Image (cartoon, rainbow, N blue to C red):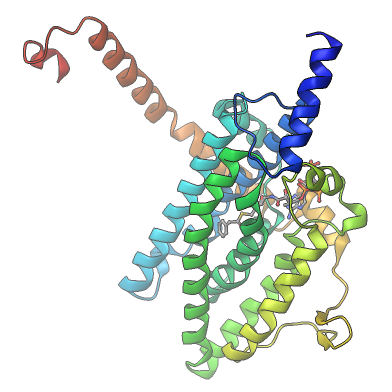
Length: 327
Ligand code: FAQ
């Protein structure tokens, strides 16, 4: 490519992003834009897949058939989200195998939140209310991401996440209004999940390596701190209607700012979890690797079936004359 053509393509890309047009897979894009999207989308997809584990832990112990059916549907939705996101990432020229390999070898991250344990049934409610609530707050703006396939995947994901959030809220409400013991269990779960949920939004803006560039490219629409604040403002009245307390003595309405002030987040804990030292990092990645190895036969069988189908199509006789071969 000549320098002139390169400059023209870069100018056209910048103009399209500035005009809020979508960038599509066949459009020219800067390599750094492509790499940053693969990085974020892969991390997002991995989070959906690893995020199945803490809740799946409770499927066999759900307190009723209704709760079990709801939880199974939710965990399956998370698998679906991971798959849409891997497919969307593949449109950028990467492969699912490559992304999974990077997850399994620790070269790509997944959300810090899934390195915390689910100790009681109430944790399923706290994850739905707080973790899915934080996920929606972060992800609704991604429906307007400059990269078309990511933006479109997010529309469906956000609709499903809204249902997840509501089921968590409803579950916690039932516990909060139940016996004293159930109320205490709900409160304990909220106490443990509140701070890690605030960390999901990423480091503070002045330590966020990618925010400025991602916002300029309209991959991200708001900064980490803006979204964290939005989430706190949404969660406070919801906690009140649940009859539960958020574990932060510094949480209070600030009339001047028109927002809630909140206490200091333990960023040392956040970075430590990212380094692999959270309570469940080893368990989560170990289980993911095992599931991948144990699923090898399914992938082999699917590939062999696809090959057989392709070969049959090539040698196919006119319809109706080749029924046996297709079985
Ligand atoms: N955990 O420069 P920034 C869900 C990393 S889905 C781990 O601020 P960026 C659904 C970051 O990657 C939850 N790592 O980064 C569900 C970077 O490292 P790198 C996932 C984190 O990209 C619910 C470094 O720190 N959602 O919950 C975290 O501009 C229930 C510097 O950070 C998404 O992925 C973290 N929390 O902003 C499933 C949404 N935060 O890459 C099951 C899409 C930051 O240089 C059950 N992603 N890092 O090695 C995003 O919006 C962004 O990527 C952020 C981070 C906001 C997560």
